[in-house]
Image 1 (cartoon, rainbow, N blue to C red):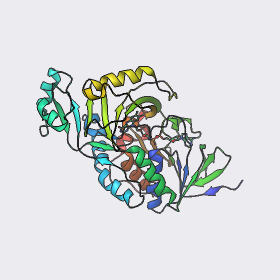
Image 2 (image 1 turned 90 degrees about the vertical axis):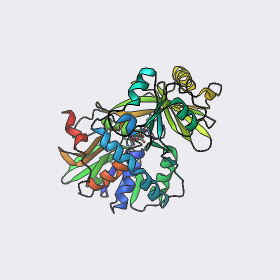
Image 3 (image 1 turned 180 degrees about the vertical axis):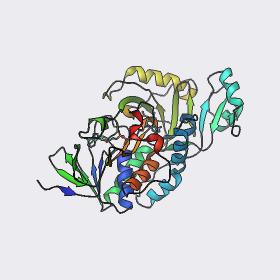
Length: 358
Ligand SMILES: Cc1cc2nc3c(=O)[nH]c(=O)nc-3n(C[C@H](O)[C@H](O)[C@H](O)COP(=O)(O)OP(=O)(O)OC[C@H]3O[C@@H](n4cnc5c(N)ncnc54)[C@H](O)[C@@H]3O)c2cc1C
């Protein structure tokens, strides 16, 4: 069979694969995007929170997450020029409620940075329906993006991009001299210079990779309510809420290691509902009208696996984004486009190298 050729193959079309495909094409690369809908894919299931301050806590990911968050306004503006689908971006801040007076005491005197503490009365002024007796912290620059609209916007832009061809599932990769041969599940063969591993939790199942990938699925369940309950994203009582356009509120999320099982459970529905009703009492008597689950691609340290593989640099890893893959979409897309153009990205991605688990 004759192999089809392009510059870059992208194996997986979640947010990471779609955005990387568009970024590569806009750098002049021809792209084959391998796409199949596995049940439980993470990107449409996520909450879309852009929350580095909640997740970063001084770890090596903090710089990456903050830099990634700050790309969003320009990313959404660029996408608006390529697609009529409007992608709502909120940078109103995220509220993190104190659990009890002890935590409130610690949060009131942060070790560094400007004070972000808000009293219970100040929080009520920001969010009239909120019950937060111990106050909390406002992470001012954080927010959320509508990840479902983002997927639709990327699909529109990709369909209009002549350099991108979309095909079915990939089986894996093989060496072919200086090239990578990508095998399609339909028996097709594709010869490329770079292959990008972007299959989320399914990435370890691809054959021929230069190393086993320590990525596993971690299920998260979410609820949707047919009412507008808040303006800000709010974390509290082991749950969070995110406002969605069109007068909806979504609530998440559980973290469970149950393999590739994307089903929902009555237990999570009950627990999430009770957790959020404790700080947003108006949701206590509203029944969720949506309940879904997704499988996060989680690495052993919770950080993404990014960059060319030292054992075979034509294989570019872009997976393991764990709880922050939506936040890191623009950052990852730009980095993949640099690597697939034989360039080094300006940001130092070395802490996220694929060989760090050896
Ligand atoms: C409940 C929940 C809440 C979340 N909340 C947030 C949040 O608030 N903020 C945030 O930043 N992140 C959040 N996340 C995490 C985020 O959704 C993920 O990190 C991100 O979507 C990962 O994107 P991905 O493209 O790598 O994976 P996926 O979206 O899973 O995409 C992988 C794709 O690869 C495809 N695929 C699999 N095998 C093959 C194959 N052989 N060939 C071709 N394609 C293949 C799959 O079908 C899928 O389309 C959340 C996740 C969940 C589940």
